[in-house]
Length: 442
Image: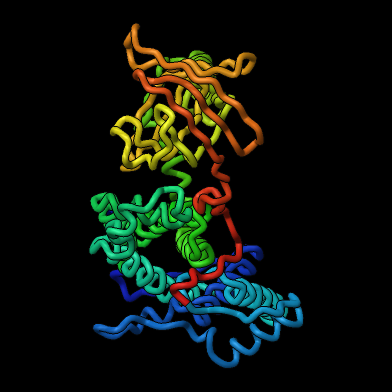
């Protein structure tokens, strides 16, 4: 008679659990203490009891006694003298890092004490079962919240009118990320659907593995964005990734069977003999290494060509503001000149081009050959063989440039001032472990 498999989810019979490995027991104790305490002091559990038409507030970690304990630790352990901030658009302030340190310390002490006092217990199957339920719903609530504010695109609003006319260089790293995703509504909605789907799959025991996999992949991607664009939710995204990893841990053997120990019936041998298949495998590995080397070299070539990070720079590299512009000996504001001479900036980037930015922010590009021996610039236009323009230049200081020459029958004299790169917010934005909230959100 064929044996009938009874799913534990559908049966009232309680499964029997074997003795856990000591490292598994210690790992569960720490996970239970760490994630349980983090969910308790952060806003995560608060988001499970949200009411209609209300936005959940801060977690209990901003109340007594955790608030006082966090403040005491900040002053007496880390020597902080500035006020701890836990409002605004950043959850990576000093307050949250100190509180995370406290959670880690308390969880470690609890794990040690628990391991000593309860060292004879064979497993924590029942506690693990119920803790997974709480953790599944805690992570799911976060995924549903962050997913829905993307499906209904409000987390990354469309660029405002002010943003549309603001120079890119004036944006922060986070502002650039918010603008680029906000400008692509379909991409924002797609990422929201993935997060919502991951959260929904966590709600059913049968689909927890798939849901945890989706959530882990999503949160890793979010964490990388937060790290590289200086977004103030690095702590939260990493904790959600760790919780997803914890939920996925019991299924690691099954995943290993799928990804690393394939059933032979799904991947047929190329040859009938073992020796021939070993040779075939070696050839495939060698070919992959060859492709990797070829495309790495192509990428290296692109790096050193025009537009790449390692491409050569112009001998006059920089953005130069036009301080004075004289046409045919007459000094006047650029905006009263004919259109092609309404220059406000001159840009030298790559060695082959010079750009003029007009007062309406449009650009015109010319080919240029710079001779530093003769201090001359030879300009060309497009594919024209007859058009040319020549300038001489003088650089009295490192941040000043004088141009004197002829273009389109006009004599042109310009005094230029170098724009310092530290005036561009985008170039000054950088990664920060501790990120204060933006001033207008506190």
